[in-house]
Image (tube, rainbow, N blue to C red; front, side, top):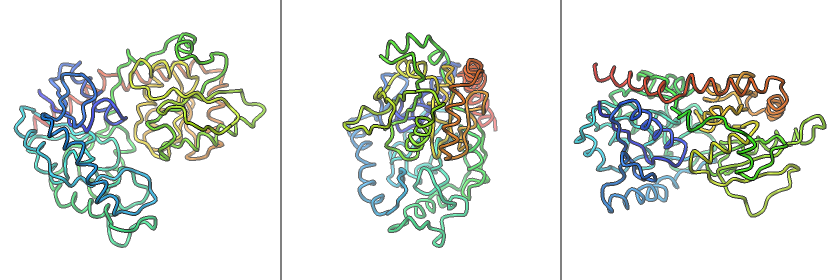
Length: 413
């Protein structure tokens, strides 16, 4: 069986890393998987970028053209990425002429493939979703109900004006995607969204988590990790990480700061320090009353492993998220995770067994969760449970088998 993985990039960004991990897990488990991307960052020979210099130039230019034209015509207060996916691509011909038995889409937006292009693929398709874009309009995450009701003239949210890019994009999906594709979601939450959506409610959907190399991410001596990162080992360390650090409001850094202020002002709470990765140290930093250490952009598994192992707890305060890699990686290293009970976070965190699930956006409860994890008498058991859950549900072999079984079922039918 030969599998073609299609993803915008390979090893930079959560969804792209997840796609690359699926690719690697398949290869390690005997599948002839190869990967095509618009932007190749790794030196992996099984990953192929644009075949010519012109194709590489166009791959970088196409999204900029759309962002500076169509996307800017939409006026919205929602700070989420929008992908109209309108420009035709020569990738369709390459895919159809390839010797792949099955094509597995991952994150293919930002003008890698147009909506119409997707309908022209003649090979069996599996589409692994990493956000809500496939059944929404142009937005990758939605806070309204248009994706459930259909994008009509009368249900546009009040915070939008100008060209209704989301309705126009959704209507094109409805027009071109007549034949249902096999959908994979990495969380139960996203699977339920697919089933509740106006566009894809009748499409087949399976839940298959993102695979993780549990030998790359595993517990190590905290003192050694602290020494390597030049961090203190005599005070509880709380970890937060996201691409761009605190810039993306969806990642909820402001909610974390609010929760930590509760702890700072609580005379009974332990003294703590915060570690942030995903951004460099800013030029000016407010005095929040507790030390903050910036680790910058950690672009390899070894550095990430050190960060998770220095931390006493990982906090993921997202307002909306699917199955963040940071949660899987932290728990694989035996680090408990505290998060809001939203999206795909309950798939990662078992409340008071591997971490703590706070009431959505209740920063006081988030603070209580951090305090509970740091002070519980069963802390060592929490760490063990976190590691055991990862081995049981997210290990490469377990996830790869689920993919292989689904591929084989599709090819037989």
